[in-house]
Amino acid sequence: MALSTTVSQRKLIKRKAPRGFLKRVFKQRKPHLRLETNSDLLVHLNCLLLVHRLAEEARTNACENKCGVIKKEHVLAAAKVILKKSRG
Amino acid sequence: MTARHCSHRARSIDRLAHVQASGHLEEQTPRTLLKNILLTAPESSILMPESVVKPVPAPQVVQASRQESGRGSLELQLPELEPPTTLAPGLLALGRRKQRLRLSVFQQGVDLGLPPSQEPHGNADASSLTSSLNLTFATPLQPQSVKRPGLARRPPTRRAVDVGTFLQDLRDTSLALAPPDTVLEDTQPFSQPLVGRSPSVHHSLPCPSHSGAKDVERAASRRTWSSGLGLQNNGAGKPAPFLAGKVEEVGALAMGFPNISSNISGEDVIEPLQNGVGEEAEERMEESLREVEKAAEAQGSARAEEPEGHIEVTEAEGSWGAVEAKEPEGSSGDEDTSGRTASPELASSTPEFLRARRLQFLETAPPPSTAVLPSEPPEPLSARLPPKPRIPGSRPRQDPYKTGLNHYAKLFSFYAKMPMEKKAVEMVEKCLDKYFQHLCDDLEVFAAHAGRKTVRPEDLELLMRRQGLVTDQVSLHVLVERHLPLEYRQQLIPCAFSGNTVFPAQ
Image 1: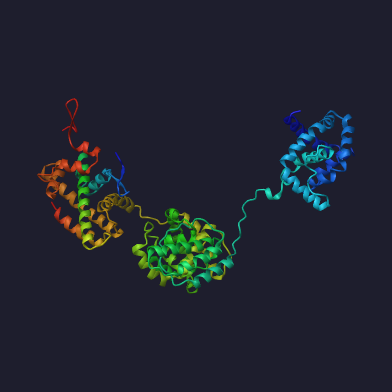
Image 2: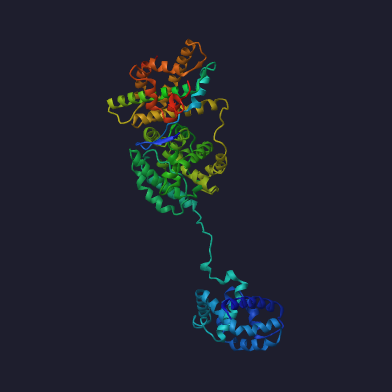
């Protein structure tokens, strides 16, 4: 498993899913439930997609404000929209 | 005989000479006399007899050698060996010690009024014999002293720092400085103690004077200023008054620490060292500042002198909490304004303190610094201890959780492809936290709806469908293939392998 990848942005991105972290969080929140092995990865996928959407939205907000830097307000507004939309 | 043989003989001759010199004082031959003189003479005289002895005993030594031929087997060897062997070792010795001999001979000549130098070299006659003899005899006695002092390796002498002048310079520079520009954003490790402080101090003076609004400017000025300060290693007794009041104000500032360290370390390339030093400096700063608070109150008013240093100090104090925040940007602006008013003295005190910490010696600095001084020596000791006692219970909960969220926050910043503020990243983490809560609740509901107590991938797929990620056009497998690496893909998507097998098995 490639722990980290160098991309064009010259940043090292970890492609590994923090499976232990996800399992621990789930166990802390819902101790009476169990999480299956593969569903762990799907949770990670879900988080990835969420982060992706959040980033897109925040970037759009920042660009609309003609700001070169993503600020707290942009992220907040983006989060409101996305979380509302993804409320199953 | 071969050269090696001759040298060996020479060595044996040397040993014999020692023995003879010690044992047979009653033999008042010129040879033994010379030997004794050589053995007992002081360092400089070792080579001196060379010129003195050479002309005189040359014939005598030869005669003595002949006279000694009948004595003992050992002694017999000497006179026999002398003519052939002394030449060779003598020449060898001469060759080796040409330079030194010349100088020593020259010195002797100057002292004695004899013509310098040519004599020791290359005389095949008795004079060379005697000189070589003398030389060979002399060397075993005082191998070190024979060499010229200039060639000896000396430990690097450290120039003692004049604290008084240093403090004076510090005050002068601080007076000369304009109101503190801004926060030092550079984290410069207070790494190397610099000896030549004065040039750097003066050099740094003009730089800090500019009140640079920009971080870069500040950073540059900081570097120079810090370099200047850094040079003043020994200024342990920095007057920097650690004002208690100022300390409190400073505490509010976030930056500063790296700046302080930069002050101290000074010189050229500070950036690569910043990270490591910054953390160290922080610890020290914490310790020192606590102590400073005690001591500083008395000195508070005195130090209006070093504005820049103060800012740095304030920043440093502020930076305790935020070690990692080396970026000046947002906070530095705030800090500058507050830092200027806060404590000019603190800044000076921090460099002093840092230097003192480095050197770890008390100095009899001028009176204002004396109060600080006693606080300083304990600082290095306290700095070694762990910085803060933490609540044992809360620690495991926060750190791994934060680390996990941080992972996703980094992914966020990667996907955004734009620079982000720290606060924005924290915001992202909060959102993730909330999202996890929702996620767990939903999964619980879905599993309970299916009558299970285990969350399975079908529950996840249902969740994603409800979120609108998975549609009739876009299936889960498509998403898996798009976003997950190969290893995970293989585990999630059943694939047919050879032998009529499917992995993962269903």
